[in-house]
Image (cartoon, rainbow, N blue to C red; front, side):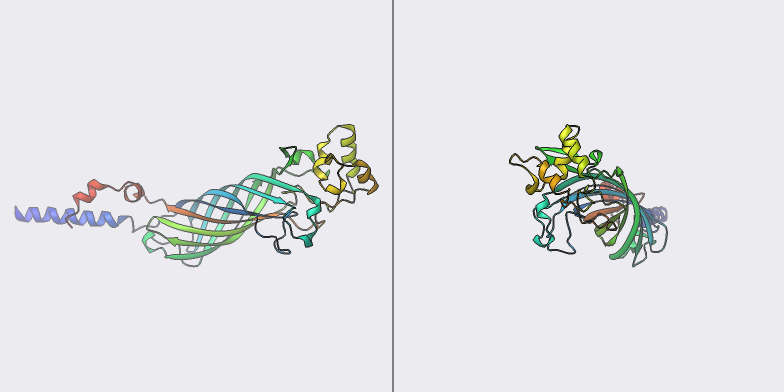
Length: 307
């Protein structure tokens, strides 16, 4: 009887020990993450690289799904909600953009596919993940593009107005590239710190591209005088030097000037972009994660506490 009792206790303790470490024996290729941070726009209304522009941050938030498929390689699909904006008044005086008095804001959705390369191996059991693991990444994705500007206290969608007589798409291709660092909080969770720049293939995320309005000012004036679409000229020309005492476009001045009213940089090869710096958490989807991370199984703990 004593031998039988000893055998049962031995088997029970062995089973408990093996169960408690079972989750550490295998790799967990799938994980999910969520992060949030700041967004900084770069374009016709912001030139941090050339002038002393300061920082004009907005914000973003995202969720992502990760898959480990190589020793140092992971793939992720990411969905991001982000805001960005730009304004002339705080610009560096050397840029001579303040007289334009232009501004915009936008709220966009983005979907990207990204490939990550890590300094240390990631295709390992969870318990063997490196405490610190820096990585680089690059990918491709699609973002909506809906710039707005304020007029008479209301925010107006700019894309349908075609202020420069040059239509552009509601969705644009983006190329995220950047650096990241992960810190292992426990077997299931990593802390993420990540910075990246989103390159695009459009110069119209801020609705500004042409250097001045000389090529299309007659169309803007015609829409304003006839009343067909007066908002086009009012949104295209915000320079106080070309407004009358009521704050409306001075058509005579615009015509005499032949539309030589500055609008953008005039560089056709420079596309708009935006930078993101985020902090978040990544959770590895282990089969027993609900028992051991969120809802610890107190019954089993008590049952096997003797060892």
